[in-house]
Amino acid sequence: MSEITQKKPDYRLIIILLSGAFISFLSNTFLNVALPAIKNDFGISTSAVQWVSTSYMLVSGIIIPTTAYLMQKFSAKTLFLAAMSLFLAGTLVAGFSPTFIVLILGRMIQATGSAMLMPLLMNIMITSFPPDKRGTAMGLFSLVMFFAPAIGPTLSGIVVENYSWHMLFYMMVPVLVIVLAVGFWQLPDVQQHREAHIDIYSIVLSTIGFGGVLYGLSSAGEYGLASSSVLIPLFLGLAAVTLYVMRQFKLEHPMLDFRVYKYSMYTIASLIIGAANMALFAGMILIPIFMQDIQGLSPLDTGLLMLPGALIMGLMSPVSGKLFDIYGPKVMAITGLTLAVVTTFFLSRLEVDTSFTYLLTIYMIRALGMTMVNTPVMTNGMNSLPAHLTPHGSSLNSMLNQVSGSIGIALLITVMQTYTNITVSKMDNPTEAMINQATLEGINLSFLVGTCFLGLALAAAFFLKQSSSGETIGKGLAKARPISDESKKLSRD
Figure 1 (spheres, helix red, strand yellow):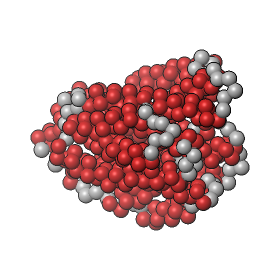
Figure 2 (tube, rainbow, N blue to C red):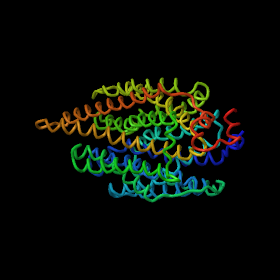
Figure 3 (cartoon, rainbow, N blue to C red):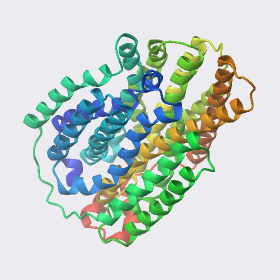
């Protein structure tokens, strides 16, 4: 057995990291229900207010490429305390924000801290458990990663119904202080003693690249797809991302080692999770817009609609991890994605008078389907990587979650806003009811596009195979580095 499989997991470290990650993941969707209220407070458009979510995910996508370096350079305790301190600072700025720009600044500072936590936690979960136990371990990770964002709208709906949206930030401050204090006193400060290198040129390219792509897509709803304000940052971003990836292959010590994509199961997992996230995160914003702007329901109603789905995601995440350990990823992914495709298609047929019960049922089944996908697929992809690529794999996984979610939100909100603007521009003296109907049709079109994303993920799921670290060492790693006697023994085990 290798040292990894013999060493007992540090549950104290894992519990503290899970606590911090829960709060940071909660903030991913915490403001979705409050977006209509924020839009009205600051007098801005739907395209503008989505930056509350998009800016958070965008900064996460920019920071995450550096986390593989940070995990090798600093101890888990140092990274955790730095991440939570930044998150606390951002929470205070956003809470006291008098203008929309200050709110966005606070969200970006929050994201800088949050971006460090997800890959750090995933890396510790993967390296702390042997391959045959990782499904269960990653189920706990998924419980935090998906339950926290899912329950966020319910909690924020209750708060926004009775208080200002500023309270969403104020209420997090004492919890963050407690988690920071516990982390400072209880986390072991174990130094890594590993060689790490940073490449400034790579950081600049990733910032311009992911920032340009997201800004371009997010601006399309405001300025139109053919606008120079959209096309210039979009093409600059795509060019910078291409140069960034090419540079990583040339560096002796890449910031992010894209050689993880030489392992087919990791590549397929990335495709499935990326496509699914584009539909999942966008849906978390489109549903509150539909319920509050079109149906005139309250933030509390919106939160209550999402609560059963949140509970399903929370309860099923550990269960799906155990089922993965027994049955593998393919059957679960195909079943879950089929449910997600069908229910998302049903969401593309919404009417002004669509009942609360119908929406609730569809959302619950959709949540069940998505929970059956993420843990098995993500674990299977990480299992296919050799140990020296695990930090890069976890960082790329985290970046993929944030960037694909950001692109999904930006793209589907743009589809909705563009369709609405074009339809309204053809109307003579449009009434509020006519504008609402145009917005509803735009929402339906966005969900239809989301159905296509999930269909792509479903097609990819048919190519899934059970992977293991032993399989990886025996095949892919043979070309990368010599196989040690201990690794051979692990492969046989």
